[in-house]
Length: 122
Length: 179
Length: 147
Figure 1 (cartoon, rainbow over the protein chains, first blue to last red):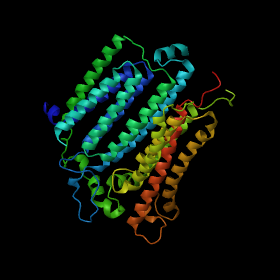
Figure 2 (figure 1 turned 120 degrees about the vertical axis):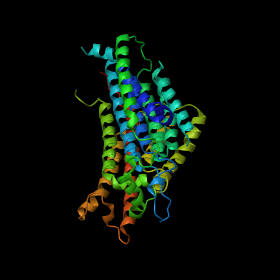
Figure 3 (figure 1 turned 180 degrees about the vertical axis):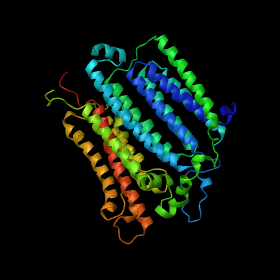
Figure 4 (figure 1 turned 90 degrees about the vertical axis):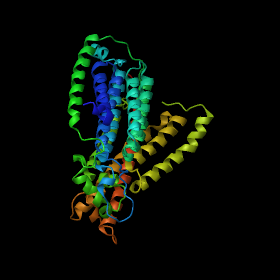
């Protein structure tokens, strides 16, 4: 089990970043800090998928424009890249809507702390 | 890209993430988050995901930082100091258990860089082989994104349009409504 | 309301860099076939150039027309994408099958090449307009008359 730290540090970093994001979203009471935690969770998952697409001694998935046969083992796996492009754009859209909600809440209650907002709503 | 480069960039990214969340001032936290995005983009470019790195550098480190800064400009950017010891201990305990379970389960994941691992077989090797003769596009990621998986990209563009409409509806002028 | 920046350096640099960034966005869009790039990156770069010029030169209160119309361009981009996908459906093939687009004198792979370029243009317009529209919304232009 020690080889996971030596040969596969990407998975350890993914676990640390993802759980850090979850911890911040659960514990912190400031709304913008929670959104920072959400952003950490999204980018850590993208790191995980990109790690699954790496091939040893391979190059980027842009084929040279000659018509010879292509060996798929010389190029990185393009399918997780496509999925992660979608994930990044959807993540920034979610972030925009969440920030709009935070601004609307601030306009109404003049604070960004969750327990003060809940107290003012009673 | 050697393993040492991966180590270095991963350590820097984790340090930046820790800095972004444990800083009291939200403005500094957001700017450290932008640096974190840049390190992640460097890491992905080194791992061979150049399109994803480009998009993360432009959209993640550029656009989301701008959105965060605009939101902080309209609200306040100081965070109140809390104690909440009980919540923190419970969260740390349960996340520690979850983390060790994840570490234990990740032993079975494929070795990083194995060309014969399961995600690298079947349809993605088909895409790599057939993309140039079927779509005349050397960039396989663009071909898969826009042609083979074009329906998902239509959904994604609709999502970002819906987000624009939702932001507009949440924050528009109320001088002509009777609410 | 965002006040114009009061430094000559910022004004000059914004004036120089805005067309350069837009030209680079166009380059990234068109070369998405042969090098890393494509629709999303180009749209965000274009939006970044517009945001740069807004931050340097400010927006006055009289420009509310632009911010209401910015999201319409986003819809036009999506309509372009769906329209290019709908054309083969009308002509009898499947949805989003660019090989059956009605462009004369080309084989199927070249038609798919041009179909990909068409929808990348649609995505660029949609993403650029939506990013600018979200920027306008988040900048507090929609300040109400009171609670």
